[in-house]
Image (cartoon, rainbow, N blue to C red; front, side, top):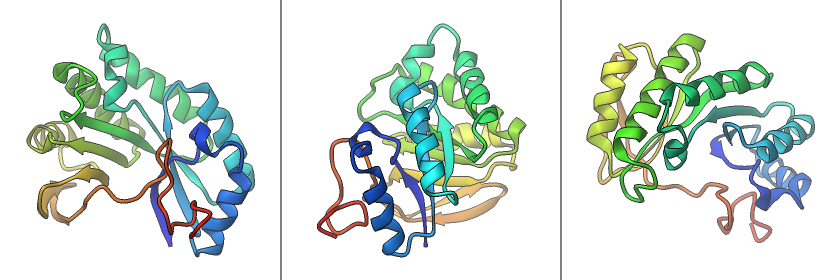
Length: 199
């Protein structure tokens, strides 16, 4: 079993990281893709600990749409930051999580879109798959993927979809039926999961 999206580098897991990893592996999770926020030094440090404790783990590095506003003056800087960290992280498997979030709108939508586009271009250049976060922004997300992906992107969605969708990703229609599944986000741990002591 592979966990394609978890946040083990979050400070919430720092105190008992080894125990969290042990529970996951005992539950049959053989590999995990850990999401890292580009430029977050604490997460980068914790990622190194994760890599030593769980060598089959990989990382996705990106600028989340919530933080896109930090690059409003130059969206390209977001991609440059991600590129630098990907190149210095041995197990950087993907670019993410990136995308659009119109539910919280913590960054202006035009800035979110610009930062998203720059990171998609980076993923193509680096030949990395993408981890896409989209919330209440499905039309714009798909339009940008179509424009920037040119049929050559691959990856996964981490999303809230109102209903199952057919998504034209990588030149083919992919069926995606995905709610907001339990994941290791800061501040809570899903009960019954390997990262929950009650699981």
